[in-house]
Amino acid sequence: MILGVIPARFASTRLMGKPLAEIGGKPMIQHTYESAKKSKLLHDVIIAVDDERVYEVVRNFGGKAIMTPKDIATGSDRLAYVAESMTKAEVIVNIQGDEPFIKGEMIDQAIEPLFFDTSINVSTLAKRINTVEELKSPDIPKVVFDYNNFAMYFSRSPIPFVRDAKTQLEKISLADIYKHIGLYVYRRNALLDFTKLEQTDLEKIEKLEQLRMLENGFKIKIVITEHESLSVDTPADLELVRKYYERIILKKYQ
Image (cartoon, rainbow, N blue to C red; front, side, top):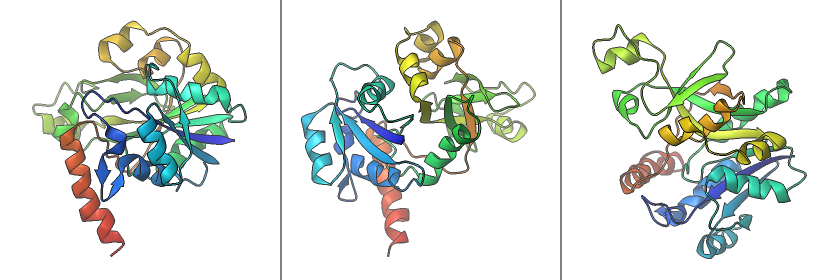
C-alpha cells in the first residue's frame, strides 16, 4: 500500500492557522487534499492534524484525518506517528500541507524510483532554478546531487558556487542549479529509522531536517521535475497563491 500523508500544523509561527487559510472559498488544506487525490499511484490520502478545528474542517469536506499530538516536533515525526498505526502502508509519501496546488504527476514522479529499484528507500523532487530571486532566497533550499541522482548536499545558500560568474544572473545561466521541492517518499522502515535519530550538526545549522539523513548515511534519490511548486509560508505567499488561483485555476474551468 502506498499512503499519502499530509501533515497539517495549525500553529505556524509565520502564518497562524495556515491549514484553514481561505483560497477561492476553500481552506488551503482542502486544496492540498484534492490535489493529492489526483495522484494515480497513491492508494489513500490521510491528513495528520494537531488541532480539533482542522480535524472538523477536514471531516466536513469528506477528507480522512488522524489526530496527532500537538507536541510532535516536525512534519516527518507526524508522518511517522501515522505510519506506526498504518501497518499496511509499505511506502509513505510526505505531502506538504502548504502546497495547495501540488500536481498528482509530481507525486507519481517521486514515487516511481521505488518501483524500479528496491535499494532506493527515500526519494524527493528538485527543479531547476530560473530566477535570481529563487537563487538568493534562503527560504528555498538548494540541492546538489551526483551522476546517479543521489543527493550530495542541501543548503539554504546557492550551491554550487559558480566561480566564473560575475553576476547572479550569470550563475543560473552558466550552471544547472536546483531547488529542492519538499515532497518525500519513504519506505516504511526508512521513515521510522530516520525519525528515531537525534538532530545532527548540519541540520541544526541549516535548519533542514533532510541533512540528518545524509549525515547518517541515508541515500536520497533526486527526481527532476518540470512542474512548479507553490508553497505558502507567509501572508505574502498566501496572497500570491490566491492570485494564482484566480488567474490560472479558475480560468481553466471557465
